[in-house]
Image (cartoon, rainbow, N blue to C red; front, side):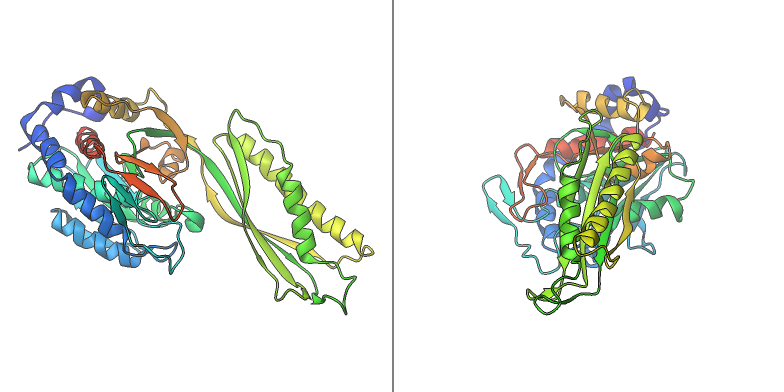
Length: 404
């Protein structure tokens, strides 16, 4: 069946009427009826490894799932994104619906998912196996109901959202084959029904402190890179940041050295800084750099002032900030979709794949996939499937509305 309702993405008041049309009602019914299958796929996706920069195995699973869901032109781009199309009556508007493949968990992590009643438990079960499952379920519901949209929908299982991935998957979407051809963008990430319309920008650094190194006893008196790093961590921990706009920092990882009885020749740390305000982030960035350099000077001075310790600061992540206005058509449409389904979709800020289009002033949001998640990014991460079908329906109706 074909739907001809004009640009529903620009007319939120029409969403309630759209939801009552026969093909859309059929798609919503299919989404609810298929929820057990959606949950089973959520579990199966999660048990395929997808550590940062190693998403290919899970990507192959999503390729097959896209094919089974009736999508066409399935391909993998140069960075590993899996793309598939659902052609509309025209090429434009083009809606991209994406969900990230990768998890924060390193290679070798035990990925078995356990189930206790409605609760699933396993690394990545919410973030982002839920998003991937809803992505596929949305395509399946549209196919089963034979919904025909005026605009084309491109479904994407993308790489590089977590850790040091630096949003490389979505950055490639906007620089590669779809450059200049994306009119609206929706990311499905984790659980809940909320809408992320404020993009929290971040700077991520790897800082290496280097020196000559030596024996802990025989060469005692040399400036120590590890001590310099410790001084830097102490200084960073004392930085004061505004609560409005919320601005944060953390030293997330540390490493280096050769043995307990050595003065290391190199140690390193990785630092994450975030803010929705570019000026606040830039100010924090400047003070962080001063702390790094002050630690070098203090450690060298401690051992006679010889400039033996140096610091190398490498930017390893630059996630752009941005926003989609609360009164923007895509946000109003998403809220109208939630209301039509008897749901509430609060607005929030976060760092997601939608950061990239927001920074380019392309209408973009991130939505949750329903259900409830807890302890994200922890091995004991959990997902409560109670009424999770409501999130699937929310995604289905939103995709139809934005492809008008």
